[in-house]
Image (cartoon, rainbow, N blue to C red; front, top):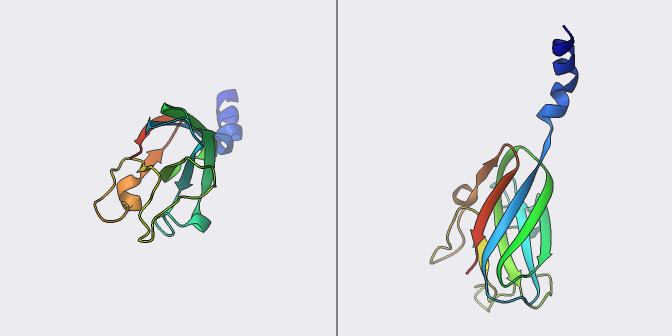
Length: 136
């Protein structure tokens, strides 16, 4: 009986438990600036700055930079990552909108024309997780 009562009391806590995502950003060409990660939880507004679920920034480390995002609920997410070499807090692009700084996405490679979709980048988070994102 005590086990059932215990389970009923803590079921809501277990359902809303929060997780940690450890992101290994590979191919960081130098230690200048920062690595910036935008996390999205919907295809609506994917890659729009005002639609970010959460974001995280870390100091760039040549080779691989590891950034940990805490307190994430279970769900489906996609990441967009870029190396902000000049630390101006934005992705620098040329006059055509093509990134001048290295970018990458969860589960996906850059397309020849345009970024991948939310579906191509998405992954399911059901517990603590580690993923690799290669930037180019």
